[in-house]
Amino acid sequence: MQLLRPIIRAITMTSTTPQPADLVHAMPDPALVVDAQGVVTLANEQAIEVLEAAPVGRHLSATLRVPAVLEAIAAATAGEGGASVDYEVRVPVPRSFRAHVSCLGEGKGALVTLRDLTREQQIERMRADFVANASHELRTPLAALSGFLETIQGAAKADPKAQEKFLGLMKSQAERMRRLIDDLLSLSRIEMNEHVRPSGEVDLSQVAAHVRDVLSGMAREFDCTITVETDGPVVVAGSRDELVQVIQNLAENALKYGSSGKLVEIIVRRNGEWAEVSVRDHGPGIAEQHIPRLTERFYRVNVQDSRARGGTGLGLAIVKHIVNRHRGRLVITSELGNGSTFMMRLPVKG
Image (cartoon, rainbow, N blue to C red; front, side, top):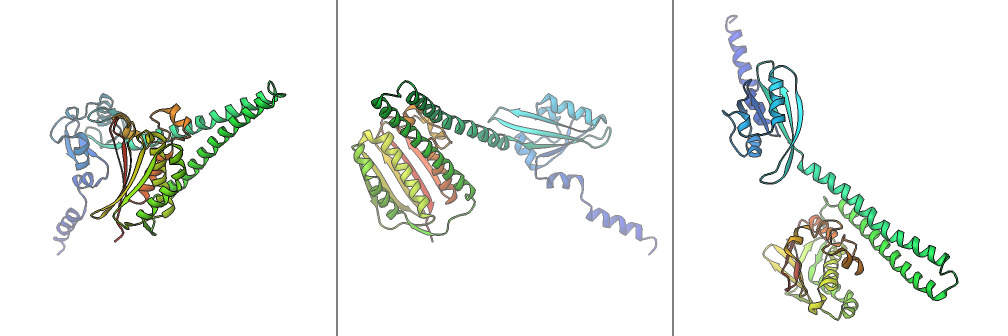
């Protein structure tokens, strides 16, 4: 028995101790091991997916053509320690990575892990753009208000007609700031709760009819007609106020930018397990290159036209986040000269 104990211990250790290959394949990030010559000896599935090739048995330079990373690996295998290298790839789509190279021992190779920084950098750029755009959007009416006040206190101090004119302009700029602040607060509130799915019951047909009635005055101003077409009650799980906001935002946009077609249609349908609400106008339409960016904050097809019509550049961003909160999708189709359709798809309440 005394002689068998070392053998039993060795068998036990072999069966329970993770092997290098197991550890590499268990890592959540792309990871691979290269030997002292730079040849890949191990690679997990994530690394194969990122490199878009099976690198095992080949020199790493055949699949990862980044000189700085290869130099860091050469230094690590020579016993100079690990390093981190940021790099970008341009095809098939632009992506950013951080390669962390760890020495496995002088002359024994290196462990390379890759971290995808693309999403993180996109969020940071979006945050910076949002702050810059919000500051710019608020600064413009503030500068106008300041200029009007100086004029009233100076050149127009004794001119009642000029004062009345400038006070009207000041009121419109103050209204613009109020709309922008309201939309910023609304967007912030929706984003804060986006991960929580609403649980109430909402009949989208009733919501569509309500929006038609609310916007009837605006439709008359634009000499346009709003119609609602529905097969009957279409019930979804959701927040009524938020879904009213979605359909109203879409219908207001249709009136502002597509009323030349004289008709805005709100169509409510049930399509299998999905409820679909389409807001369609018959106006000039939107060029194809703009469609993917329409839901970005402050993105406008025509900045001056949007501001002249009272737009803040946040309406469709609010729509997108509300639809996301309701676990739905927003589908936008448009053709120049043939109008645009914005369709919200939500799961039907079972």
